[in-house]
Image (cartoon, rainbow, N blue to C red):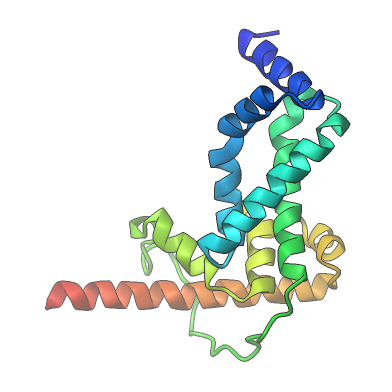
Length: 189
């Protein structure tokens, strides 16, 4: 076992015993990554922070269930994703965008240089998606869940999951086009 793994094992074992110093070390080791997950699922930074705090409380309360120390990051990631899903399931969607006008043709890299959009700008675009669409988009595209898994976790049909993903992609395509148009307009002034 590598030195790093021994250190992580010591931290996890300390957390299982409720040691505040080890809890603090676990927090500092994984907080940036877990906050980035919360931020992707949240509509704004305040929601992300709420999800983040609740996620760590659940980590500390349930760490005794962790069987393999080497799986701690995956295990924590599942807790934070589930916490984000739970956070938004408690809040009813105020609207659903079913009739989004479709643009002709699909986007290609030549048409929309997504690589020119910063991570912060893309995250903001994703955050502005309606709740269910944002959840499905994150789970499918970023986390790698299947539509069946999304269906089971969110309590929706597979078809609804696919529809939400399709709608989210169309909205994001539209936002990317608007971003590019604005960027080109600003450069021509």
